[in-house]
Image (cartoon, rainbow, N blue to C red; front, side, top):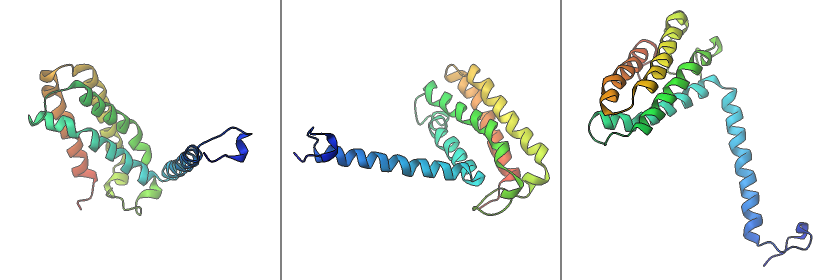
Length: 161
């Protein structure tokens, strides 16, 4: 065993010391990345949309019959949509019209009231669906409409790449 002189005579394996140092460094790097993203609305909205996109994969597979129904991933996707509906309107300040590899079109700022209303509806629909979706039948009756509202907003306010 390698002794750490700071441990006041207690033996510590070198691995434990190295692991602790690595853990602290990783936490600092993660914290710095999160702090940078908090100051970058474009990065924040991209991360939020990625979270929504990732969370909807399982429900999409369920709708297609490629995966058996499971309410937990559906509710997780609806909660991600609910969060996006709440947070997204605030992530489009005038300073983010360009730059940051944004896919938002100028229509976002030209028609901000409609844009924000669509997010409010998205949040309300996700909130209502959380209460409604309890089984496969209610999922198939409710979820597709919410997904269509995603596409409508993308069609109106997102640049094609």
